[in-house]
Image 1 (cartoon, rainbow, N blue to C red):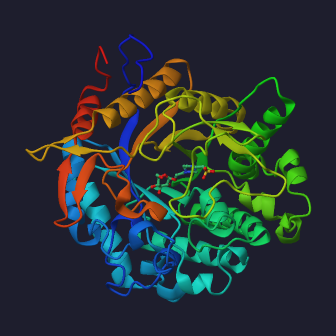
Image 2: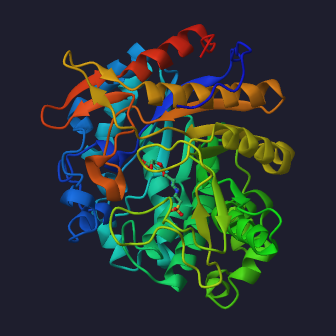
Image 3: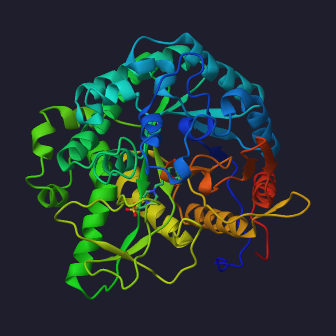
Length: 476
Ligand code: GBH
């Protein structure tokens, strides 16, 4: 378990929002109900060997039918906000005309949240592109950015009166590089030029959607969620290792952050990627669109890493369950993760709460502070090997410790003057963990996939207590 970092009792400011997060494909199921058609993840799940155990999203947590029960669970936890995503393939099946029955589901969900006093935090894209659009080129095609803007306007026309926080993308790094380069995620392509085009077009879609949504209602909170790593050189004395850390920071963090916040790709990343095709897709004016001012930056943080140009003796970290690679293998970026000797989660990710503190401090100092953008932790959480006792109770003390340690890190940076506006635990429910299928459980609430029974875990009770008291327990 994680060592306590401080003995000082931590209190949270009254205006810090506590929430939980999910994503459409990971929980909804009902994959062909009420007009929904295939997304790239439905198609990817059918590729032999792509997802562990051949799992798919056809039922998942059956949230499509059980959303009211799930909102009631959130109300019991006392969360103030719920971060969820809408499914493009439900709202624009096959990328075609609007499907009212698909929108109606989100109307019902939002009404239920508002009835319980929970603020909906809507994400438009959490990796589930309509398969029909993939067949026309997917994110590698520029047109997809414009279609994303149109879809954003459709969702906003239906929900813009009741939802005031809109984020465009979840983790474009994963969508572009795990999806189009490593092939570990849908659509399972392994093409460097398509991956760079996808990264650029995702961001272009983000910018076009922000512009269009801003025109609809000036007072919406608009933003984007990125995934971050905190990469340290294995040997700080080695120039090669320091350069490896710079490249990973460049490709995973700054490749997305700089265009959105500063309106330019970082020079060193452009040099690393020289000749790989990015220059063929960036057009004049794109960066001005991408850097349309946003109000909120969502930070997803799971773990940091120690990197080197030398491979570790034992393979370490980030392995996909299949033989597909996860570390983005740009030719110029042969970089390996090494163990830092820290305890790990069931994903093999090292538990490193001080990485979250360092990340939030850096983002505030270098990016969001100067730009006047509000900083939110939109995902943080852990898969653990939960034990179900004979009484059905789930004892997940290691998840509880993870949660408390990361909340402590958030409280610490807030005390130090970094304005963090909210924290969303990933995830409310055990759910479909992408290439890992149902084999990994991140939930505060256990899902029995045979019965769909939900059981709040020990960590859920602890989170509810933190939310109710707005302080961390003493003597952790
Ligand atoms: C998030 O992504 C997702 O938003 C969410 O849907 C998902 O369920 C959750 O986290 C848990 O996985 O070795 O180079 O592949 C996770 C972001 C980024 C974390 C990549 C692990 C591994 C780096 N991930 N990182 S690499």
